[in-house]
Structure formats: structure tokens, C-alpha cells
Image (cartoon, rainbow, N blue to C red; front, side, top):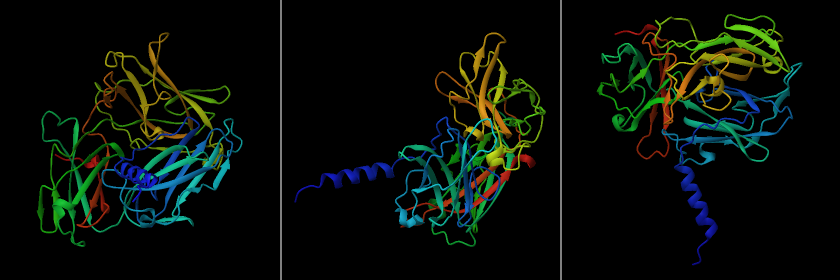
Length: 414
């Protein structure tokens, strides 16, 4: 019987794709201000099955280009799951985004695109980890984002404690929690239940593969110290560019060239200073403008000017500005450049009007990332933690999410 080469190649490609970890891809320079959320304002969608998710982004080329979306279901470890599209989607993806409009009366023209799921073309059928990919008309991947869909089968309660390790008692926060499975029949929970703990919805620092310490009736107890601890960091810095005419607290001055320029006051190193509480939104951002009523189409883009004094802690390594506005990515655009005239590290980033959180991180020569060299670590820092509970019963071919929990360090205790 002759071998069908095309069929063999298809199987090989399918096997490779199934084992591939689906990471988030960041967009090209023309795509800005990616807003991706569920019913809440947090820009990482964690939604109950059936609830809507919203995606919005701008294309600075303003040419009304066609964009398409695809949806991928993933396992607990973000490898592509074995489910067929028909098993996790009702309808069809790979559809064109038809809701788009051009900016109105802005110096920087752009096209604004919006997508809501579920819609008339597609609906999600099962819980789990998902990835949405956005392609252009040439089938070139422009960017991708992770999101989570869950069913509410178990209850999760969590608290935040100070570390019991005296080496980290002033710098780390520990997440302790319990899972109550009274309303769900879990056959072998110690083996088949997995968890992921996220600090401020950031996947890069998520803690996974944690087993329950013990069970108490229908409860799985996780009262670790070191295994579920996070460096606390510091409150995010922030600025507000909603007003194009008057500087706000963090804005030193506003100038106008081809587009507006918001010059921020210079920041400082905070690692060696006492902790000072001021409210933040844990790295997030909110688009808003006082110069119009439609934030999506009437908000201006401006060049936001950042500066940080050079210090010996940096050495010859690179410093970046990160936040949810750029998905915490380290790119040339948000890299600080040393200015010999004033001994400052500086960067200029084009950003849509709004309220933004940001912080500085250092990338060392060995490619390691130091997120707290500039800002420091303080156990008092307010952080939000999310606990995701995954379950794969014997015989199942995918990891479902059967519950979520949250905890905040605002009421941290010993």
C-alpha cells in the first residue's frame, strides 16, 4: 500500500502544534492600545462560560485594513489542547472584524477596531485556557492574547500573609488558600486538580504545579509559605493625559509638534526609600479624554516623555518601561536611552490619552530580568492575586477550569 506523503506531513504538523506552548505575541508598531477585558474593568478576561469578552485596538496606519480572529483552546500548561474546533466552538472563527471606525478630529489618525465574543458567528462551549489571535488580510499574525473561561463548580477562598522566612519577611507576600469541592464530585483531587496563582494578572510570574498540602473533609488546603510566595514589589507609578491643555500631577508640561507631547516629571529610584502608599490599578490603564465624548475615536495620541536618573545600580544594562499598556514587553520603543547632556535615561512612547500605570525594569547582560531594582520590594504593597483551579478527570482530553478565587494584600497579616 503506497504511503500518502501529504497525510504523513499533516500528522507531523498536527503533532508539533499540539505540543507547542502558546505564548502571547505582541503587535507591530502600527497597532496600539490593545484593550482586552471581560465584564469587569481588569484587562485580563477571566469570564464565566457564556459571559462576554471585549477586544479593542487601534491601527495607526488608518487605512481601514481587514483583520481576522482565530481562537485556540489550550491545556493547563498553555500547550494546544487535543480538542477539535467543533468541540470547543459553536460556529466558526477566522472571521473578519467588522466593527471598526476611523478616529474623529485627532492629529494622529487611526482606525479603531472592536470585537465581542460570543457573537453571531462564534460561541465558546467549554472552559479552560484560551488564546485569541489577530491576523491581517495576508494571514500574518499581528498579535495574540490569553484569556480564561471557567465554570463555577468549586469555591476558592484565599488570604495573603507575610513570609515566615526572616530573609524575606519585609519583601515577600504569601498566598494561602483552600478549595471547597462540596458541590463537585472530584474522583482523585490530589492528582487531577491543578492550580495557577497570578499576581496582578501577569502570567510571566505565575506559580503553578502546586499540590494540596492536605485535605480536610471536602476541602483541599494550600498553606504553604515559600512555595506560594511572590516578591511584593512596589506600587506602580502613574500619570494622566486626559487633558491636552493643562498638566496634571505627574505631567510637567505639554508641548505641540505634529502631535502633542506630555513631558513627565523625572522619576526616582525607590528601592532605598521608605514605602509610601498611594493607590494604583496594579499596572493597568484606562483610556479617557476631556476633549471628546467617545474615548475610542476621539482620544488623541501623544508622545509621553519619561526620564530616570542614571545610577550605579543600572551599570551598562538596559532599562525598560512596562505596564499593561505594552503587555509588559521589553521592546526598543520602551527602552530608555542615556542622554549625556543631562545624565538622564530617557524614552518617548506614543500613547493614547488616559490614565496609565507603569514601572521600570532592568535587563541584565545575561538576559535576566530584575523587576524591582528601581522600585524595590515592600511587603505592604497592594497586589491582587487570582487563583485558577483546573481539573482533568480520568479519561478527559482537556483541562477544564472549575473555579476561581481572589485575594488582595491590602489586609495582609502575619
